[in-house]
Amino acid sequence: MSEPATVAAQLRELSLYYELEGDKHRAFAYDRASKSVMAAQGLHRLVDENRLEELPGIGPSIARVVSELARTGSVPVLEAMRSKWPTVVVELAALPKVGVLKARKLFDAFKPANLEAISLLCEEGQIRELPGFGKTTEQKIYAAIEKRRTTGAQVLLEDAEDASAAVAAHLRGEPSVKRVEVAGAVRRAVEVVDALAFAVVGDDRAAIAARLASFPLITSVERETMPIVGHFADGMRAEVWVGAPLRFGWTHVLATGSRAHVETLRAEAAARAVDLDTLYAPDEQRVYRALDLPFVPPELRDGTDEITAAYAGDDYSDLVTLEDVTAAFHCHTTYSDGRNSVAQMAQAAAELGFQAITITDHSAAASYASGLDAVRLREQHAEIAALEDPPVRILRGTEADILVDGSIDVPPELIDELDVIIASVHQRYKADEAAMTERLITVMRAPYFKIWGHALGRYVMRRDPIAVRIDDVLDAIAESPAAIEINGDPHRLDLDPVNARKAKARGIKFVLSSDAHSTKGLGAVRYAVAMARRARLRKRDVLNTLPADELAAAVRPRGP
Image (cartoon, rainbow, N blue to C red; front, top):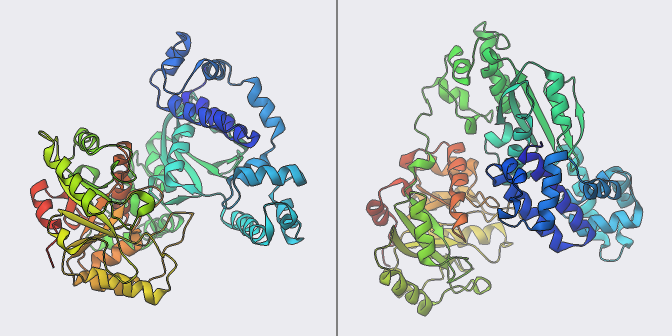
């Protein structure tokens, strides 16, 4: 019987095909079903007992598909879709600036054999002649294909985690495999992932390669390479590093570290006459110990100066952890653009083990998000005050827009009534560098405590960071009552680790937030923690590792 991860991957594949067919209802249904199957406990039992409809989002028709996929590994509709929609359509749909609708139009018009054929059509100026395309779109498609050619496919960390979990579960179905660990950029928590990687204990490479090849979305496998490399239809790669149990530590390091990190370790090993390829090291700790190094956490293995710092005495043992975070920070409710009430958000925070939550709905300037004016903000405060025995401490706040002139969208008379202010740029992102720098310096120097929210305004893979002289702004923050948010929304992950290290060097404090717009979104704080660890932040660098009372005192705005 097929593994749940394999079935989930096939359901996602069907979702894409239905989207290509223009059937948005079925596309959404199959995507939802794939998530439900992936999260299910005891899928095989549910199949055997005909109880699949107990899973969220699975009705009778999808239940029949899931059952057949689980029992036989295939279903006629999937094979028919694969015949109708060749790999190039899937590759096109995965490209930024293209998407499913344009991919279908391009395929219907030109029936291209591959992405190179589309690139040639762009060079010849034929794409712009299609209705709804034009010269600008043609240039963007050409640029996306060129980037894909040079960098390969890329996905967000969150999506790469899901894909990695599915492939890992599939690999564990091979009898000769004793252990599978997700590695590579996913384990290092890199914002954009261009390859999935796995460290595997097994003694039958051929069987492992065959198992990888049987994963539904894999189109080809390089079986004789080290690592074994599988290619997905959308251009992503899966790298499988296979090692023996007693040398798995080095296999795990190889599969996880950046190329520069691994090369540095090899150089250090050569200097100490250590053969890493034959080293007795069942775990990674023994690899680093053999090189007179402390254990280097995966998030730090980027090949910059992590080894130099370790030899200089940093053992990285006190990097901030998820368990250190005491408060759910930067949370939205139904008062603005959130999906859950204040009470629901507070209860969810308590269930996750937090001591406190900040309710920071948008300010009035964010009219598109139903931002709160002074009247509605005070109504919210009254609702919070009226809650009987709230499960966590609730800090009343706002995510206030930083306006063009560098002022903040909070009436001065309200500042003393707030427990926390997050100040964020939401409009006029394209201001020139000088204007944006002055705008941010002005607000950071305001004489009350504020937290710079999703600092550079980026959407990973969708919107570039704002143009700003970041060092000048950090200098101003270091001299002002202010801190910086590291936003855990998987599409933001902002402030980035490189600039967070610059801020840390100036003694600036941080908060780690989820930017949650629902109870489910509270869990995104784990991504903020990952970015903070990559920036080498310690517990002492992060304000919302303090006990609730101390946190409240630390972030409270001080009136003008």
